[in-house]
Image (cartoon, rainbow, N blue to C red; front, side, top):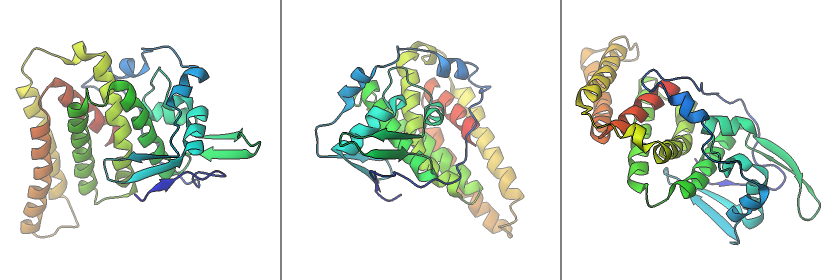
Length: 268
């Protein structure tokens, strides 16, 4: 993804977008309840002003090494006109995005402007901004280790299912949107740590989950018409198993296991 720059008259051109289902997860039967719980009060416009910048230019760096760049006016216009990005009652990223993706407004000079996140690339940008603001509320340093591990888990799952499907635009866009999903998972953990902090051993549960992924790979490779010889199938299976091995390494407690299961079920 190349550097994205907000343009005063219009931010992004619209295109067809793929909507992700926000469904209940059997492995986390409280998923929807947690998502919909009002933890904090709605934020006023005055309170949003604390997110304004005085810098001439704002740079937002992503996990994929891309950069979003805004002028002071552009950045502050987004803060003022998309309250779901900074509200105290944080919504699930898909819900926040679908709440408001464009706005017409009059700027300080009296000119009419149109801001939209209504394209696939615009949605990517929205999720990165969502993560940027929620990161500050969650605690940048406090949850840095968990954030890094979650990003690795979600990225690995996206890579795995992208490889199984031989790529596609959905998986490409997911790499940017994962930042928003991971940050919301940190938000869950911050408010429901007692729920995730289970005293029992998750070894068997994790083994079952990892075994299920390996079996899925074995089944999919077996019927893969793009790979003909058994040797090629075996090589493909080994490459995909390496991604599962990475997941196995990163899932070290109940929280990571639950989040991996939930993210997989929600998106793949």
